[in-house]
Length: 301
Image 1 (cartoon, one colour):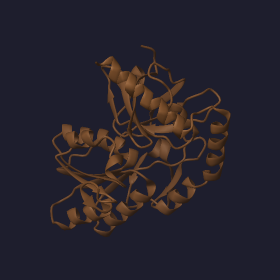
Image 2 (tube, helix red, strand yellow):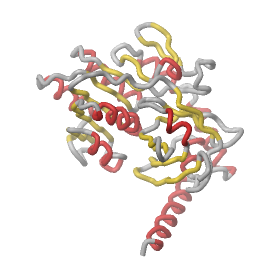
Image 3 (spheres, one colour):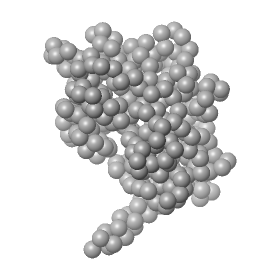
Image 4 (cartoon, helix red, strand yellow):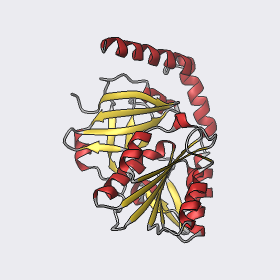
């Protein structure tokens, strides 16, 4: 195997892919909560990715990737056996694993990746894990099997009611908090808008929370300032001071505003990449995936 070689790449939910990469140096050093930054082509942008699991002995990293921009689409369209040119890590501060009895995890979207690895660390020390996992629909519950494996209790919520409780994660969280059962800490990871409303609930009931933030990031060393966030009125840099912060103190409105900074630029870049053929359109990529699935099925007959 080559360093940074893709060992697994499969579609696990609409626009969401699970990827396993051989990256032994990072796998030996990384801790729960830390992340990597990748570059798919030499002249391309650098993007941060959460690490959802790792195996120091096998030298592998497990990633959960939502294809949304040019770089993530290039990445998920790479074939097994391909090599990612640049992977930098581990970056950020590891999650502090506290000696607590009950951890409540709240995850949504690809945010379930950091939830998985942090929950595993807590589970290993005997902490009781309750996970609330939310999505718009049941087909978007990527890594549900991992959530079930790592959690003592799992509460599923879907906006459309196709699985679990119909509604959003905050409804389930508030019910858990008001049930009277002690919750020592709430760990939050997912879309910023979800984290904002979850943090409003924890703040309302004076429950401690940690939010794994996902701001715009470039270099990952604190030099560019692109990932700055305000926590308790103080400017922090998510790449070196985080990505974990006190959820009850994060200025989520500022974070949401900053994440919208390059929406127009990202849309235009995606249109250019489709037009030039640098990346496959959704229709062509779907056809390629279906062909690969058929080939895989034939190989196992």
